[in-house]
Length: 351
Image (cartoon, rainbow, N blue to C red):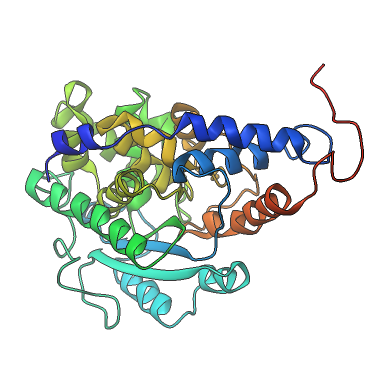
């Protein structure tokens, strides 16, 4: 498939269904708009699914795992070996997010889209693009061909999950160094100073943060990214996890499945997807706002407002998992609560 074909195929959410969903909320026997953002997102999901009454039974968290060559520049506290360790823990259901997912009833699907090592029960040949990206401080992170391969993998996984009967997809990632790649991409796409857009990630000290910012600034200038298209930006300073999640967002739009964004890195991937295909924006559901400095800028650009603010910065899909019970509670009220007519109360009016 080509980008042009996808741009032509993917259409915005169904606004007629959105209208029907809003009408349903107006009849539910409670104060109007009293569930706030939950009502808004339940209605948006109706438009995505193109049906006013729906269920969310099967939920899948897709965790894109990848390594980033830029860690050689000292931009992280830990080494690349941690990526594989955590990916293996996902396969054993031993991560923080796995435990949260048990509570939320979410199935976890870890994907080795670009780790430097293979991991049993995670690595699948048709999903792995390469053994990590190049060090973008020295050369572009990946080729355009590798980038598109990773995007296509994300699109394909969305289609597979749709065939498997999943009603909603959640985004997650694991990859040492990916706040560096995400900050670099976001700095360009939002046309902001890397010093504003870059945080300490998983525990850098002040000197480490300065080094991280310098590496990003140098790469933006080296590859003249302020004048580049989004694919060039992603290939130059991005990561395979970002590319795979970008594809998952596009796939959600293609197959009419809502995609719940996690934090900063997932948000940057979604921003890339929307730059490529603007209609994808209709298919994205917010979760939380990460502690990373640029996270709220990314959500603002996507036109999304977080459902929860918990100062989380774990990544791995933890924020996306955390909002699933909230969405399900909102959907329960939407689908099962009696109307004003049922409870014999005069219907509220918008004043």
